Image 1 (cartoon, rainbow, N blue to C red):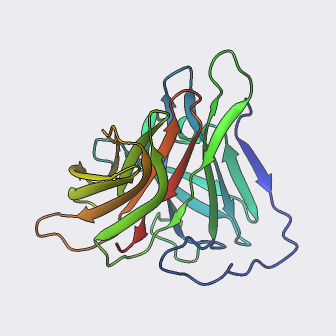
Image 2 (image 1 turned 60 degrees about the vertical axis):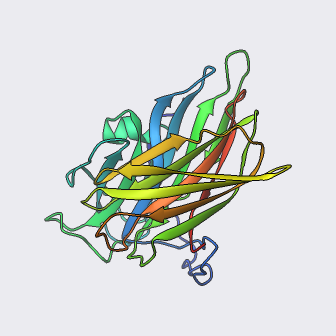
Length: 267
C-alpha cells in the first residue's frame, strides 16, 4: 500500500470555474477556502473489507498555505481544534489512509478542511482543491481493490431544511446507508423518509439526532427491493436553517462494492 505523498503541481493553464451552480446537480469548483468531506474513515467492514479514505489536498495558490484539518466523528461531538499542516505553493499532499496518517484517528467521520492564516484565523483567500475516495482491498480470496468516489463539498451558508437523494438501491444484494454531517455547534434533529419503488411503492420514516460538529450514518432497516428516494428534513425545535450535508450509499453485501449519492436541496 502506498503511503502519503507530497507533490508539486505544474500549472500550465489557469483553471476556470467549470460551469455555473445549479439547484440539482453538483458542479465542479476549481478551489475554495473551506471544504467538507462528508464521510471518511479507517473502518474494518464485513467479509474481509477494510475501508480507508484516499484523500488529496491541493493548494492552487502561488504561496504556501496553512490548512486546518477538523475531525467530526460519528456519534459524538467534535471540537474546533485540529491538525494544522502547511502546503507549499502550487503543491499538494495525499494519502491512501488519510484519516489514520494525518488525523491519527480511526472510525468514521467527516473532515472539515479550512484555509487559515498564521494566527489560525480563517483565510478567505485560500485556494484549496480536494479529492476523496473510499476504498478497500477486495474480500479474502480475491485480489485488487474496490472504491467509490465521495465528493468533497464547498462549505457555504444554506437556507434550506429539506433535501433529497436519488439514484440508490435497496435489495437482498444491496444494503443501504444514510448519513448526515452537522458542522454546526448545536445538536440537530432530522426526519428521514425512505421511498422504495419496486413491484409496489413503500415508504417509512425515522428520526436521526446528530451531535454538534459530528456526523451520523445509519443502516436503513428495509426489506423491500427497488430504487430508492430519500427525503431528509431538519426538524430541530427552535432551530434555523443552516449548513448540513447528507448522502446515501448502496453497498453490495458480498463484494463490498458501493456507490454514493449526495443530497440536493428541495423535495
